[in-house]
Image 1 (cartoon, helix red, strand yellow):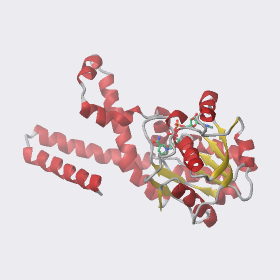
Image 2: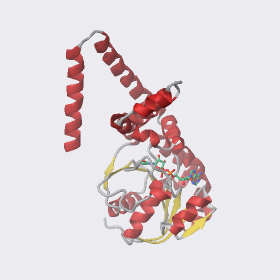
Image 3: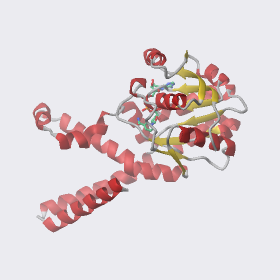
Length: 290
Ligand code: NAD
C-alpha cells in the first residue's frame, strides 16, 4: 500500500521519536500540517524553529479533533492519560498510533481509554532510537532501514493498520507484525535487560566513596557498555514497570548466568570461561553480519 498524504498530523510528545516521525513524513512530502502537543513549551518552540511542527497546541483534545493521524510518543505510562483526553474528540476516520517501547500495557491502556475508538488504534514500536532525548535530537533519517514492529489486535481496523504500515515504510522502515505478548518477551531480552544492566553498573560504581577515582580510569570498554545509561530515566522507569513480568524473567536468567560465571572464576575453570566467551563472541559476530 503506498502512503496517501495526511492533511493534519498531531504529534503528542514531540521528542526524539515523535519529532523524527514528523520530520521523516515531511521530508517524504506526506504531510501538509503538523500540530505538536507537549509538556515543555521550550521544546515545542524549538520544534517550530526546526521546522518539525507547524503549530503548537496546548490542548491534545483540540489537536486530535483536527487530525487524521494522532501519533502518541510519550513515556509509556503517560499513554492512558493522553488517549483518555483525546478519545471523545477523535474523528470517525482518524487513526491513532503510538511508538511505545512496550506493547501489552499500551494495548490494555488503549482499550480502557479509547473504548469504541480502540479499533482506530494501531500499536507500534520503532526499533530505532538513541540515548538522546528531545526534539533537538530528532532526525528525518532515524527510521531509515530500521525495523518497526506493529502489534495490532483482531479488533484493529485493517485499513488503519495498512495506512500506518505505509507511513512507516515511507519513513524508510521495514515493518513487521507481532503479537504484543511476544513483542514484550523479545524486547525484555534484547533491549530492556541491557538498558537496566547499564544503569545498574554505572549506579553501583557511582555510589562508592572512590567513584571519582574509578571513573577517571574508565576507558572505551566502559564507555561502550554504558552508553545506554545516558538514556532518559523517566522513559526507562516506565518501560521497566510496564514490562515487569518479562523483565523479571530476563533478570533471573541473567543472574543465573552471572552465578555460573562467578563459579567458573572461583573454581579456576578456564575451560568453562573460555567456552562461554567463545560462544558469546561468535554469536555476536553472526548477529553483526546478519
Ligand atoms: P523524549 O523524551 O525525547 O520525548 C518524549 C516527549 O514527550 C517529551 O518532549 C515530553 O515532554 C513529552 N511528554 C511527556 N509526557 C507527556 C504528556 N503527558 N503529554 C504530552 N507530552 C508529554 O522521548 P522519546 O525517546 O521520543 O520516547 C518517546 C516514546 O518512544 C516512549 O514511549 C519510548 O518508550 C518510545 N521509544 C523510544 C526509543 C528511544 O530509543 N528513545 C525507541 C523506541 C521507542
